[in-house]
Image (cartoon, rainbow, N blue to C red; front, side):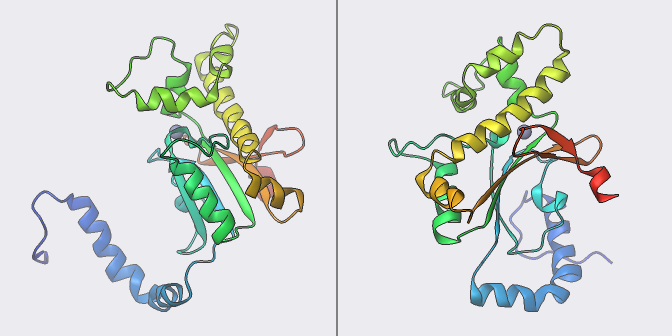
Length: 224
Ligand SMILES: [Zn+2]
């Protein structure tokens, strides 16, 4: 029997209501104590994850994390801007500042992913702004001339160029992380570790960046 849903504003997505209903009925009864503890004690995640907005690459799904376990900041193409204490709005930098200074996370993971629309746009020389503000275009300028450079590798396929830039952007974000004094000080002291990863959406496969070489290797063999 379908339950009547009182007081739900018209047009609220039915799929979200169904999902919430499953959460309330199936998840919450077992997790009630855990949520109550988190509410009382506050969050103490050891990991900050910087990931893309892409709906197919949700960190909580990929890493099967529980509430309170991971502090997640998502933006188009999972980019970290360089330290720049001027200007007005710095969403990524604000999340980073909170994670490092207040939550004192021990790890920051930059998670890239395959078939990233943001990275694809960065490689497209003919891309037009989606709106007069061209917010995506300006945001992706952060990748700098490397997008243009990768775009010119004519001997690679478009897919290969895209994968390459997806991984280069992870490395670049990690370098930008180190431009934040709060990150570099703790990183140099060994109290904060920086990691890169890349998720292959088609295969559901995670690749981890070697911090020494910057190369990405699939994790499957290590887990087998
Ligand atoms: Zn993406």
